[in-house]
Image 1 (tube, one colour):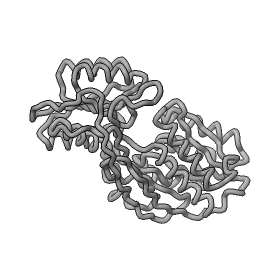
Image 2 (cartoon, rainbow, N blue to C red; image 1 turned 90 degrees about the horizontal axis):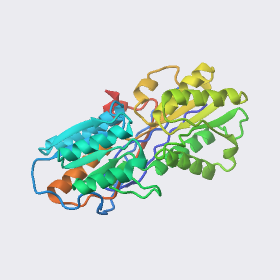
Image 3 (cartoon, rainbow, N blue to C red; image 1 turned 90 degrees about the vertical axis):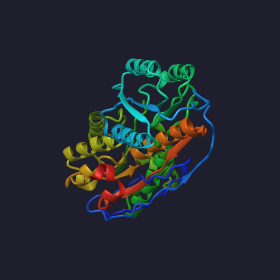
Image 4 (cartoon, one colour; image 1 turned 180 degrees about the vertical axis):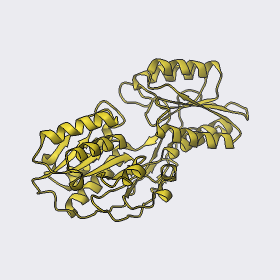
Length: 357
């Protein structure tokens, strides 16, 4: 197959510039130049939790994450820590280990300790209203990171910083469409597109929707070649789901896998290797944190990813909280970071130093 490169720029909502999406190619892809995505800002004061900044100089801000051992949240928390400590504040990192009850208990601890602000990725969005109500009553401002604090209708209950999931998915779909065109795959009976969906994870659904929308827009009729492998973004469940699709469709020997997470793409890569289809297939991750490891693996079909920076999310959230606490600057309702497509052969140490070191 020919190698495909596509630099992709997405507009980010609000005041933050981030690099982050990557593209990929199969055998020996050529390097592409990563493109930095500009940020556009829209000011909208947050109404959840506290609305007036406390008059004090020393701040204690908590980062409460749903899976604190994950590389993503460690990078996000470290970025928040650096900004907060540089401003003379204290940052406390907390991990609820995906346990909703433990998350609520940790919120109670934050309230009892009279912390000045909370940055959080909630483990269960059904707890959003209870969490926001607790913090609002205590007068503690909160910013949701990655997964929104929202009601049952999807309305945001607190300021949010994260990725523009639909547009990042659409960017992957645009890259994939060009790859298919360049390699004359649209009419190849042995070619198929595997979407590693995560239909039970609300933050992942728009990623798949964006992929499908752009693919079908640019390649009418391509939906006949789309297969879905649903999982929960875990590497192991991704492997099982991808293996089932591969086994159930032996006529497909050239797979283009589009994932909603890096873990799903890695799981699919292992399944393709086991089926002997790695050399004729390609996996595109979303996140980028597995790129250094997978790109170094000579047999892996994982050769691209949509890269966006956890540091960007953590840094933006921390700065917005500090601006509110120190200056009374209203917290924007929404801050979305964009992404850059990077492929095998790119200078990862420059593009994503937090993972390439």
